[in-house]
Image (cartoon, rainbow, N blue to C red; front, top):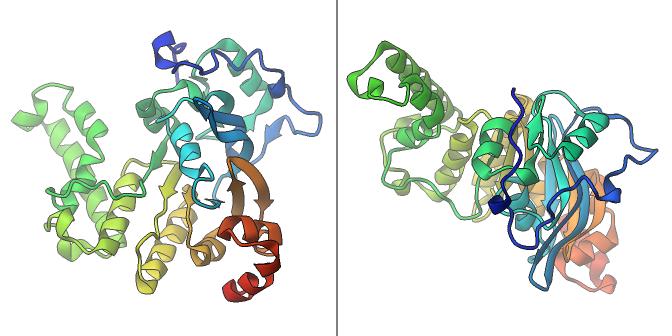
Length: 329
């Protein structure tokens, strides 16, 4: 892929750092390997401030290819702010967010890219320099939201087709080819329909393909939103509270869907308050409290950490044992 252009000044919010190149915090530590094998997303020293409020404070973590990584913490810990920085909705005050949709993150190449001022080169991207649509297109990051954002008046099938608007527009030549039914457009349209029907089958909604999305049960809408994101062929799918509001049966169906997505090769980064979901499907857990990372490890390690339980559930230390018993730790 060709180098992406240097970001324009107007794309930076007031107070955001102009360049990460001058920051000594990005010098390669001696302990860090030149290439992070298997890591496709690396967040380094991320901070986000809103006036005098620090929402994220010097956060660093990685997401490995083929893993489900959970980002957990109490309300107000900064989890959604991290998502918004990764997906381009916010420009962080400082820090570096590196994404390698293909291959591993090479530290030397990353440092060179940081110094260059470019957004990306050779399938390596700095997400903090990119607008959200470029993150979705080039870095291949997709997301869902805590509040479902389907097109309620469109059918379930149409919601999945509209997620593939870019290849359809390309096939139309950005002209009237789609309206007149040019062969290239008809072929692309059939591919889009086939992919949409495949995902409807995977989420068990084939029978309701022609029903308005807004008329579907809540759990079906959740799965449809995930399927819509997957129609964009992401390598990293960010899910904000996917199990919120689901009953136990729907949560089990969601768990099976997320595992199948991971097994097909898409990495997942999820925010979730349902600890049963987190502990059942996650390969890696990062815990935030007041914008700072307080733990990072395997689910079993996180579950056994009393300070994590106390911070996440908001209980005093002397009640941790009771909480551990309740969640089966």
